[in-house]
Image 1: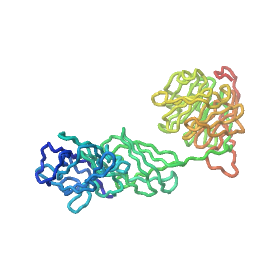
Image 2: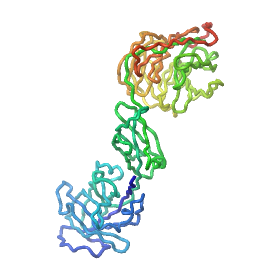
Image 3: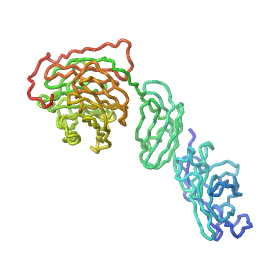
Length: 522
C-alpha cells in the first residue's frame, strides 16, 4: 500500500508597511488604496510523517497557485494565479501581490514543484480530506492599510491522493499528521463483503467515510489521539462500535481490519418452539441465556433461593442454591457474569454460581426509583445500561455508574406484579412489556415509540417476561410446585413445522412445597 504524508504549512500575509525577507519579488505599480503583501513560509516545523520525501521540505516548491475572491464572491485578478516561490536563506516567500483594502476569502491554495506536480494542497470544506484540518477553505481575511495580519491556512501532502479528496488551500502552514489503515465489512457468518458507513471520533474530532464493498478500503485519519472510537453502520444491520488505540489501527496498514456486522432479525408473530417444566420452592421468576445454556431464578423466599441451569432445549442440568430472593436475571455479554435483581430493589452480581456467592452492586436501587419492592430489571445486550420498569414508567440507568440516563413514559402493561406491571425485557432494537392477564406483549423501539403487539398462547407470571437470542420467554407460575417455561421464536427464521421441545425436569423427581412464607403479593 502506498503511504501518504500530511502536514500543515504556515503562510503569513504581511502588509506593505512590513519588511520582506525576500528581495527577488517583482515590482508592482501600487495604487493609494491598495496594499501589497507576500506570502512568507517556513519549513522549520515540517517533519516527514511517513515516507513521502516530496513533502519533507519546501525546497521542492517552485510556485504557489491560489484564488482570492471578495467577501461577496466576486473575482479578483488573483484567480488561479501562479506566484513564483523563492528561498532566501532559511526562509521562503512568494512574489508580491496587491489588493484593495477590504474583506476577501481564499478559495484555492496549493504548491507545485518544478515539474508542475501538486504536492501540497489545502482541502475545501465538504471534501473528504477537510475532516483532517481545523479550518478548510474558503477562509476569510481582511486587508487593512498599515496593519500586518496573519491568516491560518492548513495544507496536506497531496502525494498519492486524488484532487477530489481536497477542497484547496490556506495561509498558516502548521503540521497535521495522519495515518492510514485498511478496512473491510462483511456480514457475520457469511463470506459476503458489504458497503457501509464509517465514523471515527476522538474527543471533538470526527471523520466520516462511505466504505465500498471491497476488501481494502483505505481510511486516512488524523494522528495524535490516544484512542479512536470506530462505528460502522449499515441499514438493517446492528451497528459495530469499538474503541481502538492508534497503534492497533496502524497494525492494519497492509492487512485489512475486517468488521462483521450482525443482521437484524425481523419481528414476526410468536411461534412456540421450547417448553419445559420446572419444580422449585417459590415462583419461577425469570430466565436468561449465555448462548450455551438457559438459567432460571426463583423468587418468594431467599432461604430457598436457587438458580437452575438447563440445556438450550430445556433439559435440566444442575441446580445451584443461592440465598437471594430473585425477581430478574440477566447475562452480561460484556463480562460473562450473571446479574440478578432482588426483592426490595437490590441488584447483585453472581460471582460464583457453584459456590452460591454474590456481590451487591446497588441497594434498594429499583425500589428507590419506583417505590415498588417487587420491581425487576433488564440489562442491555452490551451490558452498559440497566432498565427498570413500573406501571408504564421506564428508567434507563448507566449500569456501571448507576446514573439515570433517561425516563420513558406511556408504556402499556398489566395490573399487579403478576400481571406485568413491573417487568421489562430489552434486546438490541426493542423494549418489551406485557399484560400477563391477556397474554399481550407490547413492543417499542428504544426511544419508546410503539411498534406492535404480540399475542401469546401460554404464560401467566408477569415477572417472567424475558428476551434473548431471538426468543421471548414467559412462564406459567410454579407457585411452590411445578411451573412451565414457554419459549417463543419472535425474531429467528421460522421452521415450516416447528417442533415443540417438551423437556421434563429430572431434578430428583417432582415435588411440592409449603406455600409459606412468600414475599410476592400474589
